[in-house]
Length: 289
Image 1 (cartoon, helix red, strand yellow):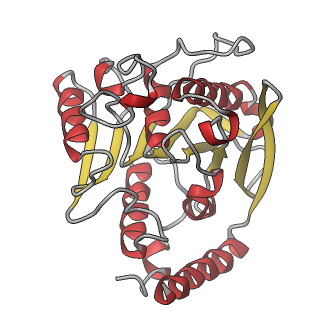
Image 2: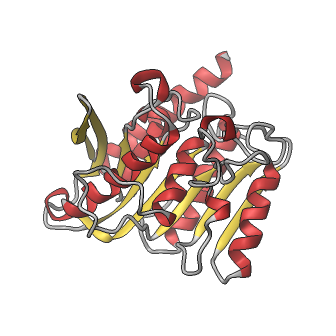
């Protein structure tokens, strides 16, 4: 634990040093108020030019639709903001705070993407370049933004698309049936929002990073998802990591695999020309083997 804390300090120090030359600001916006709950999203926005429309990356936190925090992807958000993207970390309704089900979480995810698109000019976002990402249950929500447009709250503008340019998924829940994760939370509707059961042609390209020893969200689920995606012509990259379990990408769990998945994310985003400047993750993370 002491070693991890030291490495975390070194990484945060590197982010702070680098961001002085590539500054970003953090602000919070309420994107949705429902049943008395104000849902915020945190923006990590590069200070480049107020006239620029920048690509955006949205991170949905994990927690089994029960708990979790928008700070889940704070380190990744700070790094990618330092490379020129607007990074957004939305809150959404969960069982422990609002007494809700995964279906309400999906509605909030769709609302968040619609909010960004509807207000893209004011927020400085290129509405055609929104990438959606997430881990575990947050990976499920990210996938849902590409697949479902029929789980909506009354105030949503349904003319605004929720479909992303691409998806970055960290050990995502892609099967909510009995072969996957969360069927008992679906109130007898386990296939309604199960991504693997609703794959369509023309879906956004996916990068999936998953531990091969994950017993929470079985690796077989993402293998099956990837196979079905490719069968109908969709692009889906699956990066499997030997001996890694659920949540392996979190810095607190494994600094080594935090670095590996961050650099893999960076490589994928660069394929779409979404980042500015050169990578510095490897240079400033040399302490992490």
